[in-house]
Amino acid sequence: MASDEVTVRGGGIFGLACAWELARCGAKVRLIELARIGAGASGGLVGALSPHVPEHWTAAKQFQLDSLLMAENFWRAVEAASGLPTGYGRVGRLQPLADSAALERAEARARAASHLWRGRALWRLCPATGAAWEPPSPTGLLIEDTLSARLHPRLATAALAAALRATGAEILFGEAEERGPVLHATGAAGLADLSTALGYEIGTAQKGQALSLGFAAPEGAPQIYADGLHIVAHVDGSIAIGSTSERDWTDPATTDARLDHLHARAVAALPCLADAPVIARWAGLRPRARQPLLGRWPGRPGHFIANGGFKTGFGLAPAIARAMADLILTGADRIPPDFHLPES
Image (tube, rainbow, N blue to C red; front, top):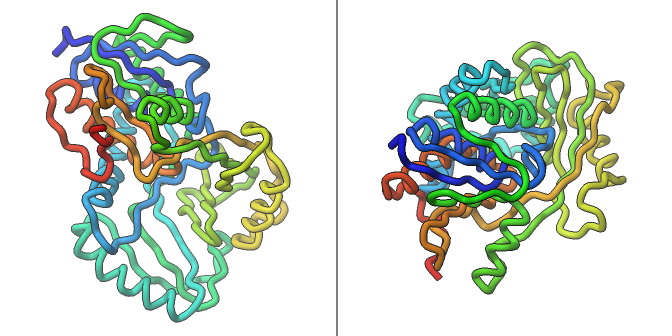
């Protein structure tokens, strides 16, 4: 398929990952980005790759599981091609258990995971040890899963761009000529364009805020998920904390007191961070739809959509990249029904 030309619009995680998979399949790829790599939500700080809870199983949850299991090989290939780190590590995750009801749910999910995750990852209960890198747990027990991973968003997007250039793909900034089929992976702005084209709101932008602390976490420290927050120890020595979900805002790129509140909650959830200095603050818009939106653009032959990642974009990227490359290059449709764009 070396003669196939494909244009990808958007230099965020969906655009970069799909372009990389298309290039690996032999396509001649032109990626067009209006601003800069990772200009939108993909330029954030958190990078938590976490699974759905193992219950009420659906094709969409299976797709996400497959993507998380693909992630290590995907990101190692990016690192090999680019010579750059991505910050990927399958470090697992710890969650506190608040009460007996939470414990009962966790036990049921552990049984479900033993079947649904096919032995390739575990969801289990373990006693809290009192270690500094553990959230306080009222029950004295923690949920541990071995599927969750971390990825440094800014390192990962830079590595993907370098890997693409190493394959001979073009990365162009500003407007440029489209060649061949066109994949639109343009985040919040693209979601608004799609809603306008379809004549109804299929999704919307939602603001998020996150911050990074300077703290020497133990090597390979697991993610912490507590009080609705992701706390992620990255390879550069930063601890990312996020994020808010805001439907109303004045300035999408400005941090405010809501981020200070998030910081306080994170310290309560993981007290060892109490004296860690804030080294970065981030705010931006994320494309939110009911589910990720994948497939052909209705009414526009030769145009395709990959959008709506919201908080799950980095975790879903390997499987989405493969599915979209298959659809664009061969016509094979392996997209979960819940992710499909409506026909009209």
